[in-house]
Length: 111
Image (cartoon, rainbow, N blue to C red; front, top):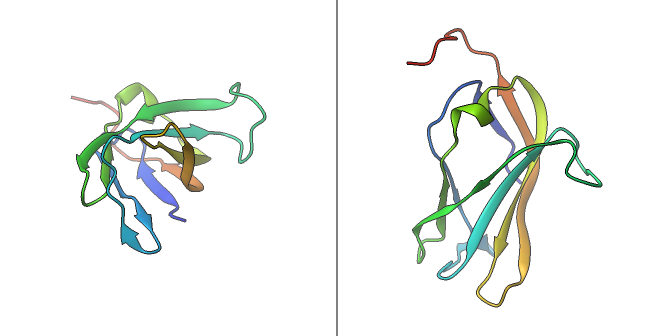
């Protein structure tokens, strides 16, 4: 598990390496989504903050990237996330689930 801490308003890419038994998986033909929610185990989507769709950076190396948008990162507080992979056969695998924190920053105006 990998807890994530980011500053409010930061939009730099977030990258994960998908591994199986500690070794990067070839993620060719897989798709990914990352969802952040205010509840650890929500029963529906009413407390969801956002969902991002991943882009594969290197399939053989198992690297996937998420590009945040400003509207999604304008939060402060403690939340939760999960990262799901949908493999080429259509199976859904939750590969990460942990805490997500947005910390307050100083600069408020985004240029």
